[in-house]
Amino acid sequence: MNRTLLYLVSAFVVLSATNSRAFDRTNEVFKIFQFPADQIPRIDGDTNDWNCVPESYVITSTQFVEDFGKHQVTDASTPQVRVKCGWVKGLNRLYFLYEADDDYWDFSELGLHNDTFELVVDGDLSGGPLIEKFSPAKPIIGQWETYFTLHGTHAQNYHIFTPAKDKDWCMAWGPMQWIKQLPYANAAQKFSFQPGERGHYVLEFWITPFDYAGAEGPQRAVESVLKENKLIGMSYALIDYDDAHSGDTNNGFWNLSRHHTMYGQADQLCLFQLMPLEPQFVKPIAANWSWQLLDEAKRTVAFKDLSAGEIKTWHWDFGDGEVSAEPNPIHTYQKPDHYVVVLDVAGPAGKARRSKVWDVAVK
Ligand SMILES: [Ca+2]
Ligand SMILES: [Ca+2]
Ligand SMILES: [Ca+2]
Image (cartoon, rainbow, N blue to C red; front, side, top):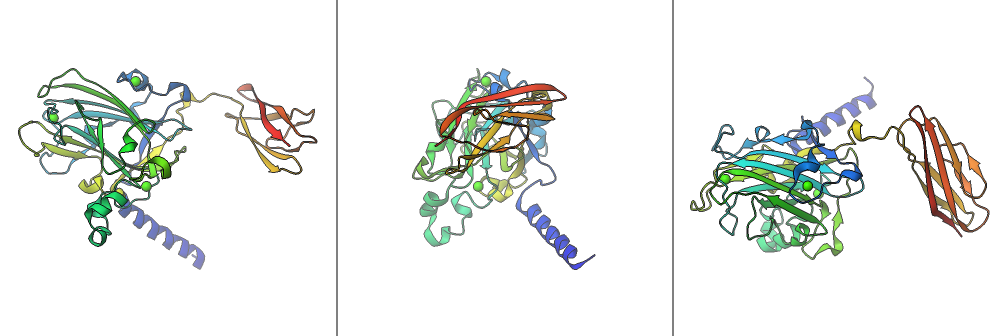
C-alpha cells in the first residue's frame, strides 16, 4: 500500500469513527418518501393521500426504545404508532402522518402533561446542542441568555400534543414560536375519544426545517434546503401519560434514537434520507431544460437538458431560426428579444417536448 493510499484509508477510518459517534443508529438510514408534485398531501386529517406511501417507509412502535427503563417492550398499555414522513421536490417542507392507538388518551390538562409526539429535526446535520442546558455557553452567559440565543436556532424540537385540545398543536421548544404557524407549518388532527378513553388518533402536519431560526422572527431565518438523496437528522419520541392526576409522571418515553437526550443534542439524532420518486411515479420520458446567461454583452446563453428518462436525441429550436442537436448547447443571439425556445427529446420510451415562452430574454 503506498503512502497516499494509506493516508486516505486512515482518514476514512477516522472519519467513520467520528460519524459513528456523532449520529445514532448509523447502520440504518430511515427513508423519507417523495410525493409527486400532483399528490401533495392535504392537511385535513384524512389519511387517503398517504396510501401511496410504501410500507418500507413506515416507522412503527417496534422500532422505538423505551429509554426510562419503565417498559422492556411495547405492550397493550403503550401507544401503538405508525409514522410516515414525506417531502416534495422543490419545497423545503417535511410532511408527516402520525397515527396512534392508546389505551388512555391523556389530554385534559392545558400544560405539558399531555400524550405527546416529539419531533427533533436537524435539516443540515450540523449537530450540536439545541436546548440551553447542553450548551457550553450556558455557564458563561446564563440559562436565559442561552435560551434566547441558542434554543432551536439550528435544530428544532416540536413537542406535539396528541391530541391538542384548547391549546396550540405543539410547543416549539424555544423562543422562535413563529416556526409552528403558517407559512412555516400546518397541522390537522382527527379523533373522537374523550380524555381517559382509548381510541385511534390521526395527526397530519408539515413543518419547515431551518439551518437558522432565531428568536427575532423569520426575517433572518435560513430554511434547510431539501434535495433528493440528502441526509438530514431526525428523531421521534413518544411520551405517554395515562393519568391526568399523576402530576408530571409519565408512563414511558419511547425514542427512535437510543439516546434519551436527543431532545436537546442534534448529534444524537438518526439519519433520514430524502428519497427519489418511487419507480411507479417516474414518467418514462419527460422533456425539461434550464438556461443561464453566460455573457450579457455577447448575448451568449448556456442551455441545459433536464429531461427525465433515457434520452437518445435532442433537438433545440432557439426561437431565432437556429437549431442544435447537442444535449447542452451554448447559443449566441444576434439581437435583443425574448424568445420561444423548444426542446424535443426522444428515446426508447418515446418522444417528449418542452417549450418555454419568453423565459429566455437578452438585451
Ligand atoms: Ca390528508
Ligand atoms: Ca442544523
Ligand atoms: Ca396515554
